[in-house]
Length: 461
Image (cartoon, rainbow, N blue to C red; front, side, top):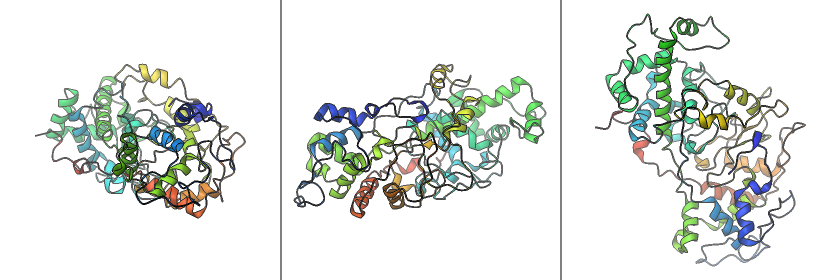
């Protein structure tokens, strides 16, 4: 998949599935209109609703063109490398990161861990409409499933690496409510954490002099009178750099753990594997209803226009027109500005490739206040386990999501420069049930239990 400036489709050939289907079947890759059948949708046959049901031993009810498209959505490849994080795939870093992920001592009040809002039992989300940690947050907590594949992070894309994303909640007063100095002192007070850190990153600095290294402190842009800012600003540049180095190490270790939270072996994937291997037993992993749901996903429902590819996301930003609370959340428009101003972005001195990949990456996004309210397209893998949905948790169930996009009733009015691809899908009740069956067939929770809890030690014994 290729990047598209400000999330705008650069032509429908950018949709990888359509391109291959066109090659395989000779179908034109033209975009179906709201009342026009998708070009790969077959006329009613024994494989589609309204005709004779398939025989019990007929595992596949898709048309050949739909089968060709399904092959483009699985398998999910290995996560892309992260050149900005030299320990991204280091097992020792991942074990340390897993320990830190579940450790509430890193928060200001000492009772909030990353896992408090990204609970493994709740799809690595929190089940709430809006996030709540130290205080309430105006946005919904996103799941961590398959975050290793993301290009941008948070709903507004204000972070561009997984390790940098992991740092932000620690110093957000609504989330962990802590500071980087407090985190460094927390690690320094735990000999096992220090040993684990040094096994990955090298020598841990001596921060025992509290005149040089206050108990709490961080930059607080716009509020230089804040106690954290006062403590931070009286430190020497060299001491601040030492603290930043450990703080970044914490983020990179947590990212190494989070890169292991992969969902890629759902019933849909088994079904597609069965198509490739001509294995009827594997083909039966996906019900006829779920198969029809995939055909709707790719055709009449037009879902793949944003949820494209094996991770079921185009990785970009769109206006979903779901009604919001009071005011206008600027979304990506503000997120771009925050990203470019971020001292931990991928072009910074903290990137392990010297910022080379970041300089190329950050040359692409541009903020535009003409198009507020655009948010990142989430993956649909394990989507059935992560309710509620949307950036404010406005829709409680997947059935509500499908009904909303089927009718667009109560949809927010599009802005003057908004995208025009979102139109009512017009799905019948039976079609909505089939689409729901397909989305539920993207559930894979085979992640080992050992990755769903704190390790016995941050160091493998």
